[in-house]
Length: 396
Image 1 (cartoon, rainbow, N blue to C red):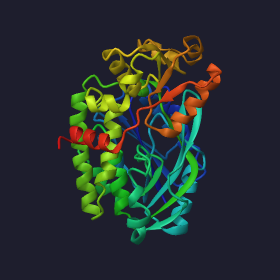
Image 2 (image 1 turned 30 degrees about the vertical axis):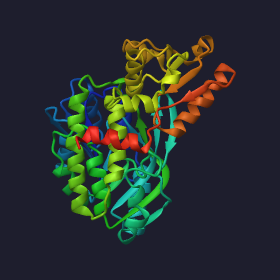
Image 3 (image 1 turned 45 degrees about the horizontal axis):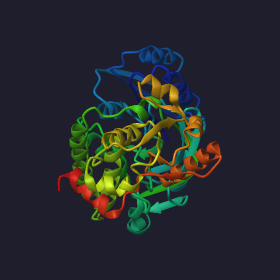
């Protein structure tokens, strides 16, 4: 069984050697490696051509910059394998990644295989697994066992299966229909509009928890904040409409509430949507904390949105901290080290995350550094607030 590995490459010169080398070194050898150079202006193409000289399984195609959707379509055009594995050019995979995925297909004849992955950020690795039991799921049971938690699990901002199309093995005859249907103009949620419809349209999937893909979350992407949030909201609406259409063509199941949760979380983090609305402000940052000595944790895009809101509304912001001050300072953000919290002695620390697990981990770390318990809060969104935010975002 042949597997086509598709890698869109755009200005990832610092990482592409590690990425492609990890593909070359797979224990499963019946693969082809399709490198789509998407208008890269750095030395990525040079590195790729150098590696291709020593491995006939590598195909290289170069095109003008067309974006992720366009690059993946080009890769599918060239693919001759029965199954497709997407890999991002700044990530890498375990040496037995393809072998483990293929083994599930050979054993159970499934259309899709979903595995766990490592999230790498500033040298730290976190294992992330699907929020489902390890086993084979058949189409006749999807409505009861898969669909209710597929996009948004019971906890807000938690996916049952990640939106990412990388690190998952898809039957080519199945993913073709959905990838080629995606408009090239979609620049937010490019993976989402392919991953979920392909899963829903499948006859069976296998879920394993083995982490076999390394997702590199670069500081640059975390720090990037949209300069045109209104335009991003328009792009999100366009993506949502397309996603709903794709899902409706595959199933009669109503995913509207899950899509709503996903869109609200995405919009708040990417654009700071509704941070200027009174209902959001009162629900997330109550008036009684306004005069307390506040420290904000995290300089990612969501943290930047909250920082702007706190300053604008004259909260007593005594400091802005992050573990990775080097990248933050390089982007001109007035961020200080997490160790300096002890000197500030704040009353309250706002942690810029919507993930309760992340919040708990950071809270424990902060309290251990300070040496005493400090009140930590994070932007929790209540149901009515989510509903109002969704209406604002989706224009309904």
